[in-house]
Image 1: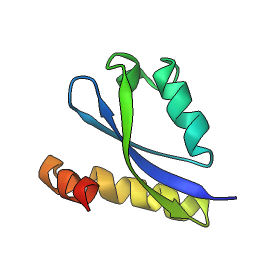
Image 2: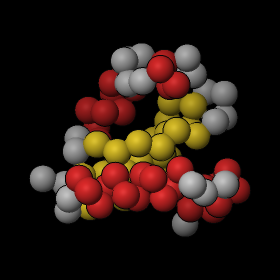
Image 3: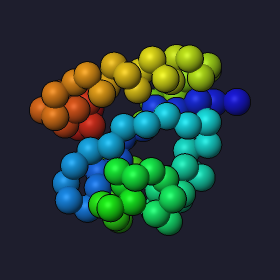
Image 4: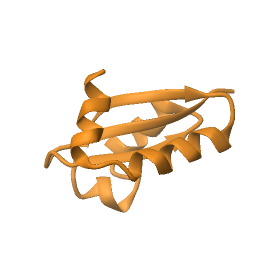
Length: 80
């Protein structure tokens, strides 16, 4: 099973980073307003970036790393 770290762009232009083992389902859950308190208030969201990992631990570690980046660094990552 693949694990993903992803970045969503919210309607207000902010970025949200998370991880999941079912990317399509998780994005759909966010779009439906059930994905998390942060995105619920900022719909709609758009998937703008993701990475794939073999383990949950790797995906969670990468989520933490991305959350430590500045907005500018995240924008550069998205544009790659």
